[in-house]
Length: 374
Image (cartoon, rainbow, N blue to C red; front, side):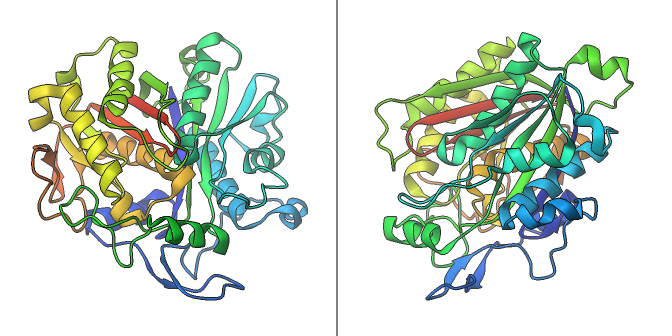
């Protein structure tokens, strides 16, 4: 059961400004010169006026870099929403699972992983795990959290991921031809790369018994998880449509759901033609005729591609669609690719949403789909 979540995007702290940006179909990104960088990049960093939540202890701030600050901000938001306090982690059955931030090949790893910082701030004494999977690592963390709960190894898990941008990472995306020179247009015939972005999202996930015992308000349940690996995918390539569809089908099978029970699909499409096409075709293979009816949207055009945090931010969006019974458009979308006849969301509208499928395809073959049920 998900009882709380917190988010940070290029639009600021909290999901309210992010939802406004989605509803108004604002594009992510601008020319940006990171500290110490040799040149400008088109990216979606945190806003200049960003200020994290005030609850971060001063005695820990000295060890926190840009990424760990936004991770802690989102995690503390999640605890507050769930009705838990700063000391909630002082229990042996409280765990943290964190998605490893995306790093460029050869780039130094994190001295203190964000999940460890979050665990220190919240006083967690249970297990702390870090999940890999490139940009699917955040979704892998949530899938791992659900498994911890299902096995009875924890009562509460704080799970998610954060992503900060550095010059080596931006150079890597530019060299690989991944990053766009202007606003991204996911799923569109004119898609030409993603906009690298910073962001974070964390969730409080509890066992049903524990949530009911403490009288927590439940936002949604995780009805099914599909987590697969594609050994054929190259390290800098995503899976093809058959493997993308296999993760979606696994999530439906895990939940025991039929395709027509899904009201909305949150795509991981970010503007890379190969990834967008593979996921779109995977949706059609999995959903058949129902692909014409379940609305398809993505947050990557408005949030940018937040890499490790992209899956968790998509889940945050999915939770909000159910809470508000509304969906938001894909910024910049004009026409889908030939042969991919999906129900693209092109305008903000009210819509009854009770079940949402969220997808994440990571470079190197990690594919995760998560089914949320009101």
